Each structure stands twice: as C-alpha cells, then as structure tokens.
Image 1 (cartoon, rainbow, N blue to C red):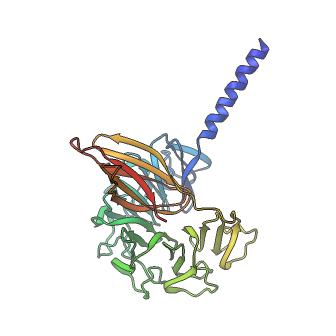
Image 2: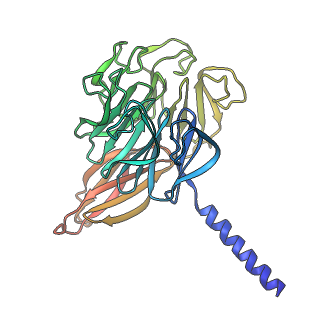
Length: 400
C-alpha cells in the first residue's frame, strides 16, 4: 500500500514539474521602478513599486518584490512606460493602468491614476510602446496612434498640446514603433525611419537640435529595428549594422567619446540582431547570441562585473561562434469570426512577410503584410476573411 501511495505521489510530482516546465516567459518590459512579463499561457505578471497603480492589482502605493499575476490569460504584448503599463490581448484589444496625469493611458481623462486594467481600444491593435508620459500604438492596418504628453511634439500631430484620447498620426504604412522619454520613432513598411518630438540633444538624428512636431524622415530605407532611450536612439539596418544618435554623456552611444551626435553614427558594421536603450546605457545582441553593452554603469547595469562606465561596446555574455540566427516559430493559427489570426515568435530580431496564395502548385504568392518581430517577442497578424473567399494558403517568410 505504501509503495502504491509513493508511486502515486511521485507521479503527481512529476506531472506538477512537467506542467511548471511547460510554462515559460515570452515577453518582458521594464518601467522606471516596475517590471512586467508575460508567460506562455498568456498570463500577465508584475512586480516592483506601485506608486500610481502601474502594477494593475487594484492597489496604489504598495510594493511587491515577487511576481504577482494581474491577468490570467490572452495577453500577447506588454509595454512599461515611466509609471504606467499597457498591454495587448489576443483579440487585438489595448489595455492600460497606472499614472495618467497627462492622459497617456488614452481613456479620455487626465490627472488621475488607474489601478486596475482598463480597456482603451476594443480591437485591431498590433503593437504598443510607452515613453515616460506618452504612449504609441500601431493598428493592424499600419495606422499610427498616440496619446499623452506632447510638450516636445512627441505625438507628432503638429502641436504641443497633450491628448488624453488616442490621436491618429498616420492612417497606414507603419510597421514598428518606439517611444523615448519625450521623443518617438517609427519605421514604415518601406524600411524608412521617421522621428518626432524633443531633439535638444540630437536624439531624432536629423542633424539639428530643433524639436520636431510632425513626423520627419531620418533614413530612407533598410531600417529593420529601433530603440529609444532617455535622450538617445538606436536603430538596426537590414545588413545587421548598428547606428546611434543623441545624448552621449556616459558613452551610451558607444563611439569612444562622450560627445553628443545629432546625425546617425555607425557603431557596429554587421551581425547585430536586437537592441535596447536605457536611460544612460545601451545593450545589443549579436547573431551568435552574445550580449554587448555600453554607457553608464554606476549601478552595474552593464553586467560586466564592474561599476565603470564604458564608452565603447563591451561583450558581457559570450555567444556561440558561428551560431545561426534563430528562425520564426508559428505558435497558433485560428479563425475567429470573420478573420484569421496567425501568431508567431522569434528568438532574434527579424523582418518578416505574411504571404498568401490560392494555388500551391503554381505559386504566385502575394504579400499581405510586412513587419519586424523582436527578440523574444510575439506577433499576431490579423487577416480579414469573407465567406465567399476561395481556399487560400498562408505562410510566414523570414527575410534573409
């Protein structure tokens, strides 16, 4: 009897371990003093300070040093602003919580705090990014929307007026967004880089230090990824080269100096696949999986075992020599009402295309959508369908 009971207990333990191992973290975001992550089961978790309700657990002013579940399922993307949080669900809805003093949550109010998730947009949202006190989101049709503080013109609507409701900046053609402290960047589907907002330290990269209140083209083509720090910006080109501009007081641009630059400067010529910009430091990943950092390091944020600032890129984590860039992985395919939902993820930064054909034998693939999937990110593509539509085939194609 004891042996049978022991076998049952061991079996239950193994099942519990297997269930736990099957759930992994798929998406992360860091704000000023709080952190968010999504698990593979679609649950949203939060930890850190909760000054203005940014954790979304119904409280204000509390702190938790352990992950706390906020939403149980269907979360696919997350963004952490200064003291606010935004996330997307699998149905394309946009949700927000936290500091709303400038209307950065986009619910039509301002000067208040929201301490539990509030739905802002009901459907059609594809990506979200949040700065210190403004937010950007991208719709599935490529439309760019913005809300919140606009003191530097970072909303791109031609004014410096704050907006507590989402304002459409471009109707289509946008495939990636990034929000800095008070500036904004985006990439169009043709690979061009655009910027707007505060530019006093050259973070927009247009060769000046003048604020820009409407989108301005910075690079005409071949840009595949962007990141916005406090007052500096980074972008990747299709050839894997890393470029930077803006504030460089602590060496965060990685050019060997502490001089600001108002024009894009190439730092690495090839093999960069992912980038991130902090307040005063920058990180990037190469195609061999190695992690590199530069800039301010007084808190040890570069992870090199010192607290010494770095003015040129330093390898922090070694990669595997000759390791290939990871490919795309389709995670789900579902028909919901009148549209098809394709979800996929990647372990590196890739440009992708969604293709369609009606005849596998003859081919004739047409491009439905292009975009960028970031390192560890999940992308959901929504394809409208009609009941009289003939049989179609779809595929996700990774750019070389």
